[in-house]
Image (cartoon, rainbow, N blue to C red):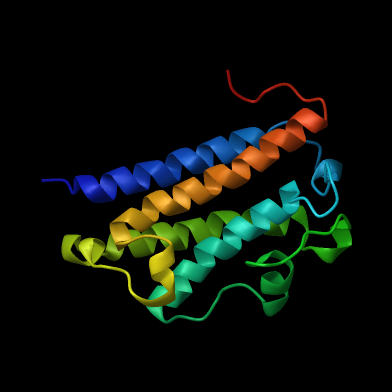
Length: 165
């Protein structure tokens, strides 16, 4: 029998990623660092931050090293402040590659967990994100949705049509 908890969490992560990528389809690359107000998150920061987030949960739970540089952490990690200068960030193609690869690593880690491991309580500092590893999938999908909303605001500020509906 299929593990519905795992399937539901994986579905939430896949849905949030499809929505995010759909928002990008007609934003010109030269607008990826556009900020509708000072210090606002911009598209390039959001994409790098989501890659960083997936990487963070993989390495913090598996004991492996981060796949991203310390510079990535400084410019797009938790608590970083976006700047409108594209040269402060890796190239868009690199960010997109890391976004995909770190998501695959995260999905692989979730798929490696047994039902009892998914149901295990999260302890320590990570408990602020979800009570269990199964619930963490939904929390991460919500986090991606939060940042997708920021990209929706950028789309509107740039005069682009809604990406959905």
